[in-house]
Length: 161
Length: 161
DNA sequence: AACAAATCGTTGACATTTTCAACTATCCAT
DNA sequence: ATGGATAGTTGAAAATGTCAACGATTTGTT
Image 1 (cartoon, rainbow over the protein chains, first blue to last red):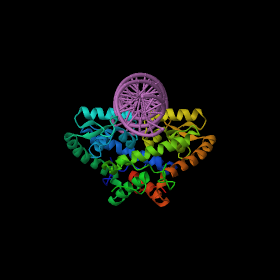
Image 2: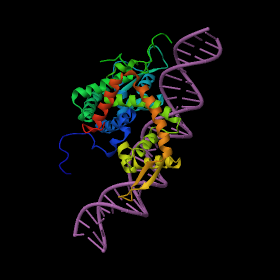
Image 3: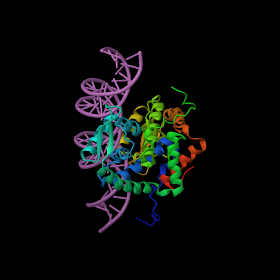
Image 4: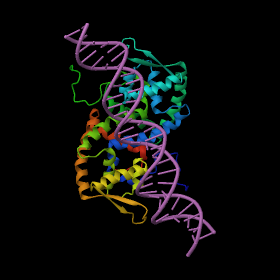
């Protein structure tokens, strides 16, 4: 507990091994920043009995897009069976409801309830703060740039926002 | 199979749900790009009987930094017990060797063998190609920028390279 | 020097997550 | 109408993650 920790820098103490070439590997960088972020995110969401997974389901349910479970599975890169469990729990808590798809009765659309919307509103703020903490090392402009580049890498030019 | 896919764009077909606000969430973006990359990475590394995990161990072992298992655990955000299993397997295959730490005999440093170096050399090329595929949607300059921003978010200004 | 507390690798138990194959109900194309 | 695909669900199996304990060693304190 010497004086070294002067700023509010959240960035990790620079590790001896950063010098290794793996620090140039995209997969590693993504995994590591994601790991760091997950800890903060889950900690922030725990207050609302949510985890990253259930939080993302809730966001989609509240988007107004009336997504089906299959669509959520594809979009979140999760197995459909995992969606079942996540939606089950959120539904049991009264945060979302399932409804049969209007064009396709096999499908079930998931929609947030009013209560779900309320919870999400608060949880979002907490998640925002967690994200800000992860991006503590970057000035605002570069944070925005990072996110833009990630979106572009995923979906190319035809981007929202 | 209409005409739409004109370029060599690897980027996913833009999903209906990109419009949801979760597409602005850093954690989600990291997870999703990481997931997409992992598939390609592991596919590329399978040829050498490596996965992302063992690959990263091998890189560190070959770095010349003589990392201990503990250092690797910290740096890779893995539990020390997982390192044991990974190093066990690589050692069994003759790609790395364990040696007692010189200052600290509790610790064990892990070093790549000549054979390990050879394998790594080839595996790296495959991983490079996989990474290029993931970044297909981004021009070279933006790819470099993305990686720089990730490093900066992780370790702040005191960066290598 | 002697002791206590902390650390490193390892093991094994336990929980969580992932992956996959079935099954029913429904849709779609012919 | 029939056959083949697809949505959701269930449950089992495999892989991963988490954690507490232990012997061997180091470090700090007296």
